[in-house]
Amino acid sequence: MDIKKIKETCLYVQDLVATKDYYHNKLGFKVIGEVEGRHVFFRVGASVLLCFDPEASKESKNLPPHFGYGQMHLAFEVAKEKYEPWKQKIKGLGIAIEQEFDWGGGFLSFYFRDPDQHLLEVVMEGMWERGKEV
Image (cartoon, rainbow, N blue to C red):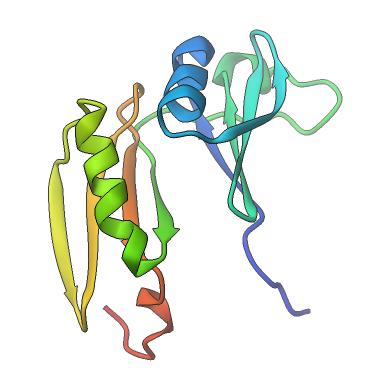
């Protein structure tokens, strides 16, 4: 079995309206699915970001129930030449950058939070293809 990639990533959020505003209106991700009070889904490059209300998805009848709580982490990969513009965009939105990290080999990333305090990261493309574990 050859898995090509992780297609979907899921976050559990407390306020779907604030989540939609943040990821769609601020970060610019396209909304591709939405059920009021249950979820909002976004296209992020070739991937999908699923944001669920944990109480609603815990009671799911059509699909297996799932839920979670706490601060999760995910990273968005950008081309090296888009890294600085993304950093400036985040700063320009008034979103605090918690840390920038130099991974060596010319690869950088920076960390910031969404409304639910999930830790988000923007990382330069190619970091994990270097053949060296970090």
